[in-house]
Amino acid sequence: MASNKLDPIHPNSGFYVKLKKILEHGGTNVLIIIFTALNTFVIFILGNESQAKKLTNNFKWLAEFVLENGSAIVICSVLLSGLYSLLVNHVNKKCSDSEQELKELRKQHTIALVVLEKIEQVVVKKRIRFAEFAKTYANTPDVQTPKHKKIFDGITQPEQQTELLIEALRDCLIAIYPNETIKVALMKVKNSQVDDWVCHSPYDTKPRTSIKELRNVNSTFSKCIEGNKLIIIPNTQIELKKTSSSDIMYVSGQSDSSEVWCQVCAPVHSINSNEIIYIISIAIQRENVIVDSNMSYLNWLLGFFKSRLALEHSLDQLKKRISP
Image (tube, rainbow, N blue to C red; front, side, top):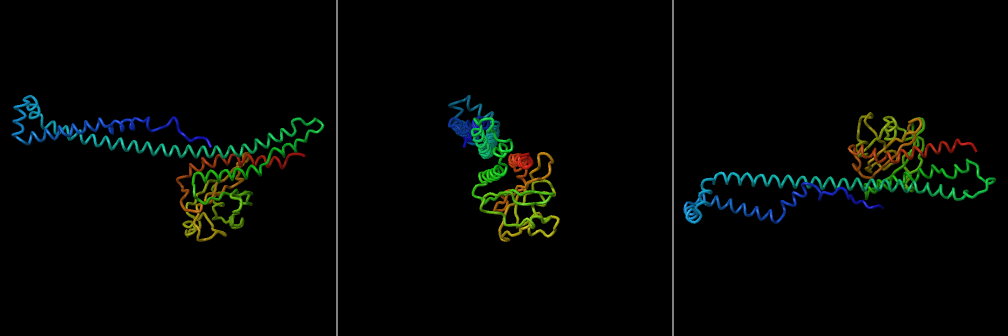
């Protein structure tokens, strides 16, 4: 995987980080100590008449200055001390915010790289297939040139590509949410109803709930089709406890009623008709892993896969209709 180093963006180049370094520098600390000592000395002289006389005898000009401006010196020193503390707190907060922004940016950068890498793996599979097929027939005599349907069938494998895309999506989610049990499946939609499972990842965990149960008007799948939008159920147990049927957006079906899941359903639209052709189902075995505030981010992530799934669907439709 490519490096996720963010060369152009680093907090050490920021104004506040540079200012923080100055404030924490040893020389600055020495100046603060000297300033504090002088302030203490002035207060001591103002409060001790005998010491004031000694200072006048030894350093007349200094004594006159301190005695004449003592109040102003004390007030200024208090103000400067307070302003210095405020400045330090402000700079520390800005640096902390900057560091947090960098961490978030690094996370987003890493996720983007994962998405690109997984999508590229799917493209590589198709590219290899094209190259192998081209190599096979590149030097074939004209009389032995295969018919166009054979070539098209050979280079287009929408079923395989669709499975690879769902697997790649799950790999991305695992990278984003490590140590979570994640299942991703693709449901075919026909006549605005769930029709049948297309594929699922991992391959050894076929969804337990029947198609009939998923056609229930309160299922997440049905709500996704009805609203024509992405649906997030942060906690399936909370959803099951709802009393108003109009608010329910999840049915347990054959799933263990004691399990707590986070469920997501997202529609995939046809390139030509814009009708819903698939529903991407994401199930994570822990509550609140994905919440409503993640809606924009999830739409961004799924957008990469939706467009490619729609493309493979179009190729599949074309493949079925092409003349022999």
